[in-house]
Amino acid sequence: MTIASRIRKIREVRGWKQTAIASSMNITQQAYSCLEQGASNARLETLKRFCDVMKVELPFLIALDVPITEETIERYGNKSYYEFISTYRKLEQKVEIFEELLTGQNENKQNKQQNNNMSANIRRA
Image 1 (cartoon, rainbow, N blue to C red):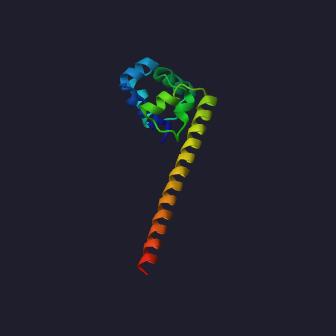
Image 2: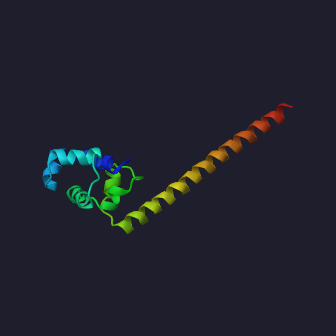
């Protein structure tokens, strides 16, 4: 996901029209449209103005690996850079542990099924 597509997605999730954001940023609708399309390299000042209008912090906007949803905007959108990275890393660690637990449970189920199958085969023999 690009910064341009993240800008569009944040606007859509927040329910704003391009014209309303452009007006709030003191730019034309056409200039804002170019920002969403990635037609030109956005200046840092322009990105900051967008963040101010959308009430999100710049680290959230540029975190390309974090999906844009209502939940992620609420959870991470207003965090400082340090808070954002720290909170996101903690979440990633929890997801890894959860996945390991699930994988372990699946392996245990498979082992039990194999043991049951072997026991059934031994009884038949």
